[in-house]
Length: 79
Image (tube, rainbow, N blue to C red; front, side, top):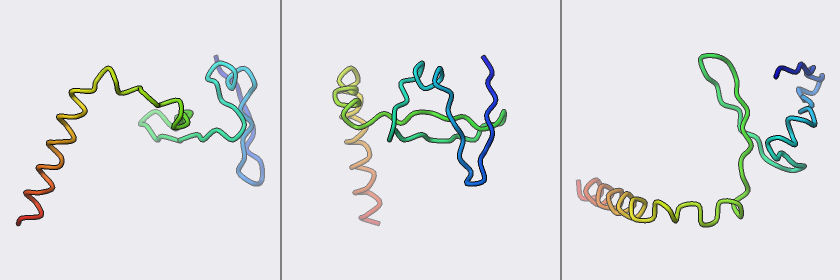
C-alpha cells in the first residue's frame, strides 16, 4: 500500500488514518525515523508501560548479559 502526503512549510507530515490505525499510532505517541539504504523508515516508539514485562521470556539471557557488562566495566575501570 502506498500513500502520498505533502510536507508542510513547518516540516510536518500528516500520517494517514489507515496507517495510524493499523500500527496503533495515537496522539502524543513518539515516532523514530531510521535511515536505511532504501530510504527513511518511521516506527512507533511504544510507551514504557507497554514494555513492562516484555523481557520475561528472555530473563536469564538478560541477567547474564547485564553481569557480563558489569564485569567488563569493572575490568576497564581497573586499567
